[in-house]
Structures are given as C-alpha cells and as structure tokens.
Length: 239
Image (cartoon, rainbow, N blue to C red):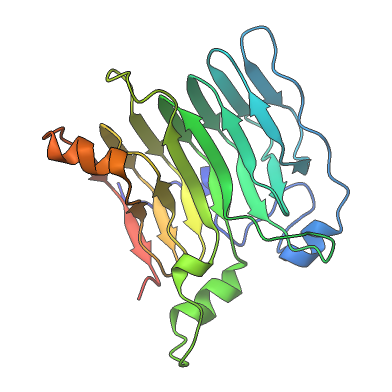
C-alpha cells in the first residue's frame, strides 16, 4: 500500500488535534502546555488526552514507551529543547511532535526528538518541524541565499546507547509522517537495520542523513553491513 493510505489513522500535516487544527508555530508557543506524565512501573507513559504536552528530558534504565490512546491524538510541543529520551529500548506510538517558535527561547532546537537507545520503534506518529505552507513555499524557492536543509531542525536524531552491543542498532518506523524542510532522520551512529514501512516525507531535505564520525567510519571499514529496507515510502515536494 502507498504511504497515503493511512491518512485516516495518522492524519496529514495540516490536520489538528485537541483544538489545535491548523496551528502555527507561534500559536503553539502561546498555548498552555501540560507536563508529560511519569512512566509507570513497566516504563510506559500513557497519554490519555490530546494535550498539548511540553517536551522534556526522560531517562530510563530499561525500556521506555510513550503511547497515545486510540481515541486521541496527543501532541508534544517542542520550543527551545527537544523531546530527549535515553533508554535501552524506545517505542513511540500515536505521538505527534510539533515545533513551536517562542520569543523567550534562547535557541532553536536542532531536532524535535533526540533519542539514545539500542533499538527504536516509531509507529503511527508524525513530526512537523515547519508549518505545511512553509514547507510548500521552501520546496519551490529558488531565491539565492535561501536557507539549506542543514540549517533547519531535523525531525528525529538517533544515537546508539552502547557501541559495544552488536545485537541492537535496529530502527523501525511504520505509518509515520515527516513534514519539514530538513532531513527526517539524522543518524549520529551507524544502525544495523533501518526499516521504514508506509511512511511519508513532505518537504526538502533527505529522508535520512548519516553523520560523519570515527565510529561510523570504523564500522563501515570493518564491513559491518547496514540493512536499509524501504517499503511503501513516499517523498513529496522534495526538490
């Protein structure tokens, strides 16, 4: 199936939740944000309302799951700092990250989600680094000196938690939408498996970007394969 077949479940970048339909980064910044709940004993953060919730830093010894209930579309708003997660295994399900601009912010975030883990699963989520009309205009902007994708925040930045553990390094994304004029996924470490199924990327910039580092160079020199599997993946307005 195509990446657009799941639109009733994941919605589109212009869809809203919790009364935030067609919200801009400015209006999101002025909205009262709720704190994210604490994980339960199983390491699960259950989001039972649309929010919006404020991005924060979360550290867990074992696995961590952030999951929105089936009847809601929880929004996590990122202003000056990303949603930062450090855990052994991370899973996001029905969670929707949006960038907000605020005059009080000291600096713009470099990513919406920054995660350090062995294995990562993202299911039925969406990431919006820029409003949809901005993505549309920048994808056709040929003005000299226009900002390039590497100056803009990426949606998801991943780094492996333990370089010595060869059993992990698996990243899997399903039914997920990325909207923004920047890379969807920034890889600070070399994964072992990168699988995307039924995902949509809207806007300029590559689908994923592998950083340059001594760890990545050594891994590739040692002939450690990186398995990349794309199934039902669509890129639009990426020129």
